[in-house]
Amino acid sequence: MLRFSNFLFPESRDPDRDAEVIADCVAEAKLCDELGVEVIWLAEHHFDGNCAYVDPVTFAAAILAATKRIKVGFAVAQVSLHHPMRLAEQMSLLDNLGKGRVIVGLGRGTAYNVYEYQGYGIDHAEAGERYEEAEGIMLKAWTSPQGFRHEGKHWTLNVPRLRPTPYTKPHPYLIRAASSEDGALHLARRGLPFLMNVQSLETTAKRLAAYRATMAEAGFGAAHIARCMDESWVWRNVVVADTDEEARRIGVPAFEAMQEHRKKLRERIYAEQGIIMKKETVPPARVNPDLALIAGSPATVAARMAEIEQTGVGGVICSFRLGPMPAEVAARSIRLFMENVAPRFTTAAVPAAAE
Image 1 (cartoon, rainbow, N blue to C red):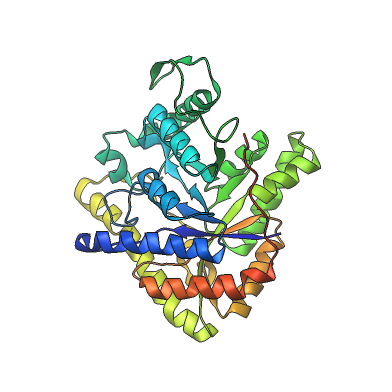
Image 2 (cartoon, rainbow, N blue to C red):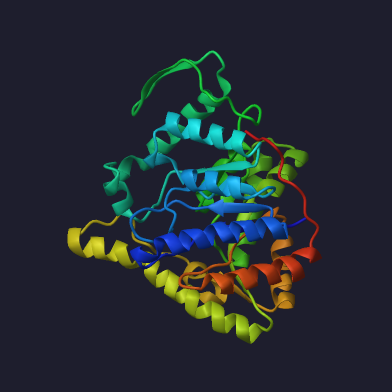
């Protein structure tokens, strides 16, 4: 049955308020732990205030220490910005600190924000190949008790053995992001679950149907396909209030302000440098609040979640705090969701490990 999680993706427009927003994030994670949310997902973005805590690896340790039950997932760690051995060590440490409560979500990094690569001195054109090589290194690091050698394009390594060894065997639970249909089908051919970005219900249903069909064509059986569907997650922006009118009054301006802020620095860099990674021809489901925002009373939101459940996906990643929305408003939305929406659905735990 459908499971629910919270994408802790807080905006901080004023650098002088960063500490306050970061403290709000810890409080939100503790609230979610108390209310029975299954996973807190963390983002990674740099230099623009779109993600106040910036470094999800460090912040995950704080969340694990402040909570007792909730899983902490990455949606996603921008692998191309990290040294793969350091990231493998850090994830293994988190896996031990949380006694298996970590979900290692991996992705290449942003497809749009060139300044994130510039700030780390990395050619954005290398992001994809760095990600592919790094993922392979991390898996070898977690599963090679005798150590290993690696000679690749970006790294030459002679690793005696990874320490600490992972708490979860054979390695921390791992999932990949797929922002496009091609990416989702690539993972389907490998027989792997995935994280989907914000899409309309129609696109979600079509993509998941294609994902299932591709997995079957690749030779995977019905039980494996069902497990991958159950372990996959779709992302939605969610605002719950007592009435539909109140939810839209709160949610729509916050959503629109969030979208405007997220492109501001990207557009400034383009104006100053004339550099653009990729023209952002986003689908309406990302920028249109009528498609990209689920805002309503508990009954309305539950009905929308039931529609998502019909696609066969296992879980929904809900973003509750949107843009400049005050922390207390997001907290009330989360409480209404967990007390009046989530109980209408049966929950189940994520498996302990997957390839």
